[in-house]
Image 1 (cartoon, rainbow, N blue to C red):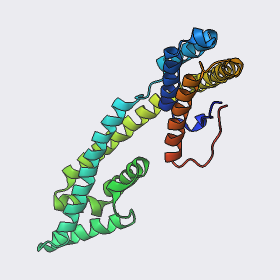
Image 2: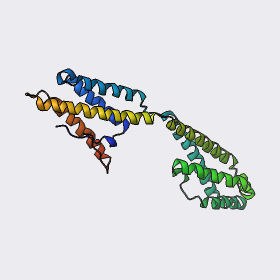
Image 3: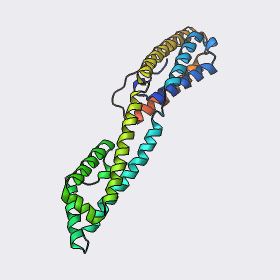
Image 4: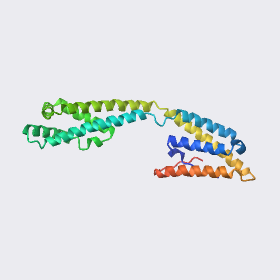
Amino acid sequence: MFLTIHYRKLRNNEFIQFIKLLVEILKSNDPEVLKVKAQYDDLAGLLATLSAIFKPDLGSAITQELEGIDERRDTAITGVEMQIKSFTYCFDADKREAANLLSSSLVTYGSGLSRMNYQAETSTIVSIIQKWESDAALIAALTTLGLTAWVAELKTANKLFEERYIARLKDDADSPEEKTIELRKQIIQSYRSLLAHLQAHATLSTDNSYDAMINQTNQLIEQYNKLVAARGTNKEEALS
């Protein structure tokens, strides 16, 4: 008997790898000898199609670029915050007053701006800059402390991040997700048909010619079920 695999919890790359390894097991045991050549060819063909359209690294170039830009704006916001804080201890009363004014303007946005998630940090920085650019007293305070260039850098980095983040969303929207979902369904149906034929032939067999293949397949299934369990899945749906 074949074990069941909790396929709905397998990520696309895991699902593809599982089917690839199964196909290799069948190939090594000779599909013709197992009397499932037609079912094997059907599954292998669907697998080839899915592998061709699935792009596990879709948007990865933009993602890496985003990480670099995010680090750039984190450096800018952290630098601005630290300089404002240092000036609150300045011996120059005008600079100390300017720093306290800017520090007070940041209080409503909370602390740890650079640790916010992407969307929250982007919108928060936009709000801060809009406030600093629309209030005459804050504009003067930034000028007094010589932070105008820092704010310009922060604004540039944040705007660039927002543009590239939107570009990544567009890439994700253009991904072949719908086709991938449909092919997974077809592969599941093909998998079920294949295992049903194998089980029938194994039951009717008068020798142990199917035992090695069944054991190898069950070991593979156990391996991937453990992978799913390790992620703490709460709901399982089995492929039988």
